[in-house]
Length: 88
Image 1 (cartoon, rainbow, N blue to C red):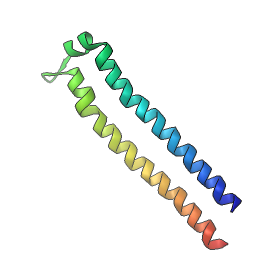
Image 2 (image 1 turned 90 degrees about the horizontal axis):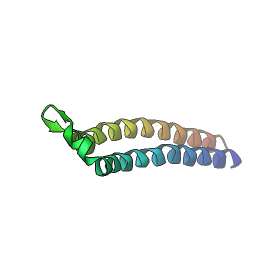
Image 3 (image 1 turned 135 degrees about the vertical axis):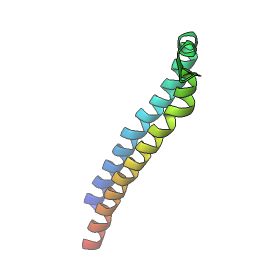
Image 4 (image 1 turned 120 degrees about the vertical axis):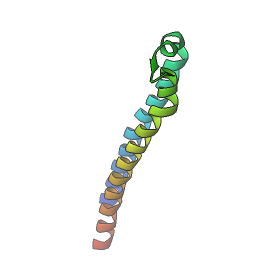
């Protein structure tokens, strides 16, 4: 059981290590748009202001890529717990 607890702590550290920087990234984008609005709104990419790209477009591919990677790693950790539990 001690090995399972170590794996669960590793899983928690992994989740927090991904979740906290991700939320900081998302909040940082909104803060950037809010605090530097004149600069950010003056930049256009394909006839759309930069703040549209940052808030409405860029967040989603980053979220999905991170989600897919995280789920794969979390499932591997769960499989490790299952292997240990079956061996006991």
